[in-house]
Picture 1 (cartoon, rainbow, N blue to C red):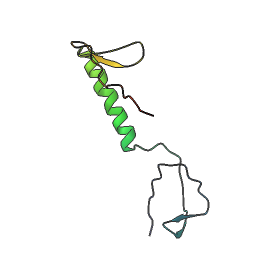
Picture 2: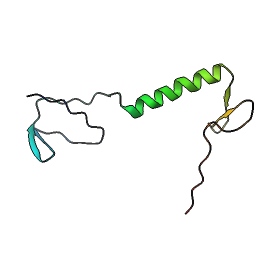
Picture 3: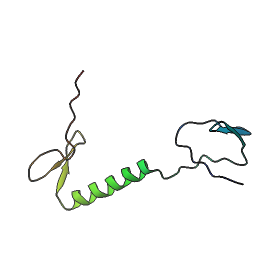
Length: 83
């Protein structure tokens, strides 16, 4: 029975691959870019940012941060980390 496995981390593929302790024969492999949830979220964020820029709700500062036009507050607040 053929099974498609999508791997989102680095992997080396040979004639066989071990999945959950089971040695499986590799029939074919590809390195094509797949749409992952992370990539989909990044694309959605870009579309939404472009629309908000078009509507003049937000602007982009020289440092790349987006901020609201009316309030001047950052769209994504900066995080402060404690050591």
